[in-house]
Amino acid sequence: MKQAAAAHKGTMAAVVCRDDTRQVLSALRKLRKNGSSPAIGCINSSRQLVLSGTPEEISAVSDALQGVRIVPLQVEGAFHSPLMSDAAEEFSEALANAEFNPIRKNCAVLSNVTGVPYPDTEALRRELLLQLTHPVQWQNIVRYMSAHGADTFVEFGARPTLTQLIRKE
Image (cartoon, rainbow, N blue to C red):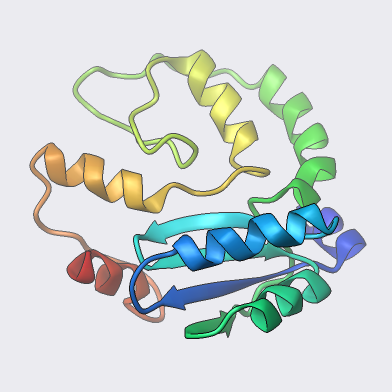
């Protein structure tokens, strides 16, 4: 991933909306029609997305939007986007040779790609690879956990960013 990040010089930025993300999605569609748009790297909540792409693509979104806050993230690459496809190729070889124990039925492990538990080890293998190039479905993960009884969330990190999103949702 580090090599792919260095090769593409990508970045990420959180887009924080007052209401919802429809304006952002509309701007992304327009930019795609013009041939260049960052990818959605994370769907964090109904009011926050994280974009992944080149600095120029992130800047173009910033220029196209009004009434949203764009927060550049201190990352080394455009993770969870097609710019990580080189890393995905190498990772697929490692995953093909990896041995996984069967998933226990009483211990759900949620997929970043789908937001629901991995049904079996083949899905785990496939989705671990997909998470390099596809958006993290954080909003769906939180919804799944909440629907299945989770009412306490603990975040480990420098700031309680995701915990605050859960409270606002």
